[in-house]
Length: 119
Image (cartoon, rainbow, N blue to C red; front, side, top):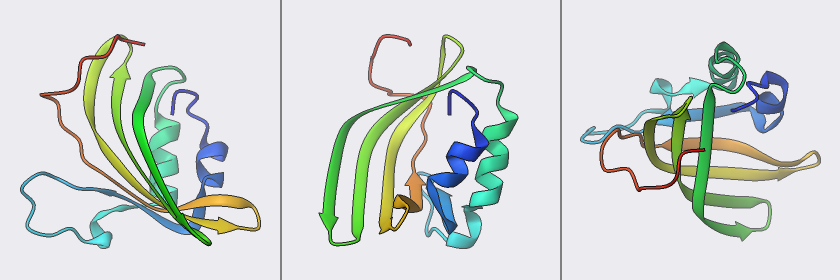
């Protein structure tokens, strides 16, 4: 994210992967409400290099054959200001090109974020 590298972002996903924001209080989430890989790559490319710093901690990984999931806390800074924080839940598939993201669902809040030093 920090590098706004669209090629690296695209290469991290399977072709039909999805990015799904999960909002607090939502009755249901639909994959149709998420972003396609192309939409997410376009979002990454719209950010100036260095303007978006995403950090993560407390990763938990589970693997079973070609399937893995990764759960972690994260925060995002825009410059030196905290923008939001949340949790990412990432499902991955092992491919001949390595592990690729199938689905990345995440929460996003602006209050109650853990206190970590700014990047």
